Image (cartoon, rainbow, N blue to C red; front, side, top):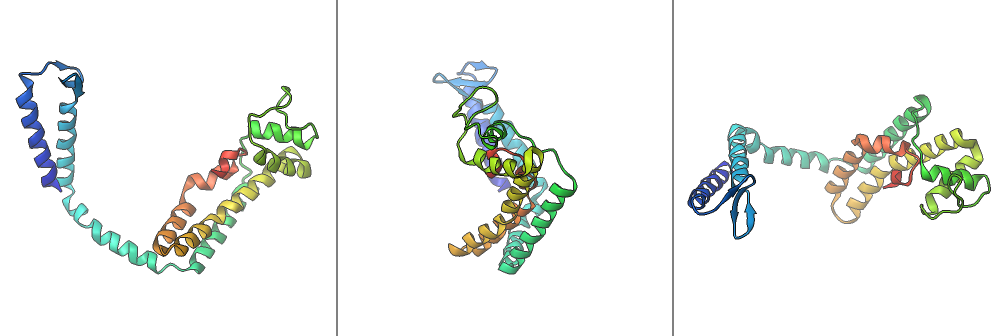
Length: 211
């Protein structure tokens, strides 16, 4: 691979040298046929890539072996492992929401849910009826607000969202197994469970928490 980039650098140098005397230059590179061709930028990029690849040739050559070991490790993962991963994720999420009591960001969906819980219909703030949001998520929030009040309802909704996200590794694993790609399902399940964004985002009381 380093030889490939060296060849590209050599070719770009030749192209730049051949056209430099004939083509007008601007701050972006070489202008030819009315188009901007940033050859100096490309040349610089490939030079850096060539140097980087040459410097880390041993690490790059070890990547296939690492991939083979990772594949072997993923093959050993079973449904029981994923189930325990989901249970551990659910426990960690419950501790995070109930014990640490993080702030629960909320906006339009929450405002609509407050009106629904109060029996005012699908309205937002003091503007009256609205179609700014779809009906499902505000209705979901309104149920918990009606049962537990504003603060308690937000916490209950966050707990439900976190538990749903805790079950996602199991769903991903089963999907991968169903299509004959168990290794893919295992990898997706582990990456989802360990991703910090998917750990925190269900705390947000907006429909984007389910995206």
